[in-house]
Image (cartoon, rainbow, N blue to C red):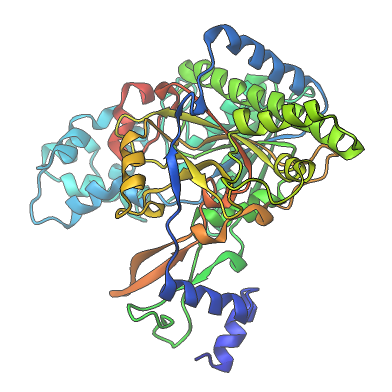
Length: 504
């Protein structure tokens, strides 16, 4: 099947032939659906913390920060903004010249409210010799869109979201990169007033991120009285996956070479594994708000972190006792109840196949993550469920719709009862009680990837997505779900989302 040229290409990507052949098998066999026990709901997998207890958790996080702990804010930022402008790209290709759809009318009716308006105005003047308002008066709407999206204009249709102007400020409008830097100072600043931020970026855009941060970092540091240590990484070539045609045979480029594609955000588990930190906050690049709303958002980040610190500390205490041995029956029972009731790990139906101390060590000595969950009001996103694992236990997992069997009545009933969804708001503990970093790829469920349909040069193909960063990529972590307000979730999926009150 593979030529010497193919084998050389595979080796160049740091992949082995066995790995590629295993990927090809996946296309033919597919991925198994997960066995869902039930949806995770309030008091059944999702914690609802009373307001009276919030302060204690927040103070616990503040105390933790005062000690010498390494904390990093990890922001996946490599995604292009092209989908954000889907409606405007459609308008450019339409056979009509004036705004017709609701999305088009909304965009042009409020165009001066966008933070990028002044830059767009300058771009229009450079390209066409007229301002935005003058072009609109002349009915040259598509010229305005072209000046916004195309490479000879602002290039917003091809840049990553992190580099676009999102919010207005008197001292200068701000990108999501700037917002994440600022936000990090609210809850991730250590005792030396240092804030560590890590962006995952695409290779072609990395120089732009570095230039933007280099130009603005000092101003943010002076304003916020802190120091930023900003680092970057790119998806590793070894996380790329082979593409196939519609007959599940390797897809070949016009020059005969194999086509490999990025393995989705699940590939970022490798990037996360390389981050030297004890606690890691994870949040998507487009989920940011202006400064006036940051204290509210930061309150719940601190809350999640406080929950993480408290529960992890209890687990560490139990592990210390287990390592010393000779735990009493009462102590073992307390530890078992902790795993069952607080970590929501349900033991196998047929009973344990190992000693109770060994079971407890195996379940407690793992990475921890606390995930904010918001009430489901129709926003897109994965959901929280209790799922059966390969070892017979059941635990909390974040599932995407592609992992749920549409022909399984129990799974569909659980989906119908699902009350919350995942806004990608995580706080992770990735070191053991002795300070050694867990090797995170060891905790991935490789059976939780999925296959998607794409196209290249007009030809259909199938792509293999690796287990997602916050679902299958963290399948074997200790997971805690905590309810947070919907007001903490403010993503920008379309350009008109920037017109929402929380972004103005």
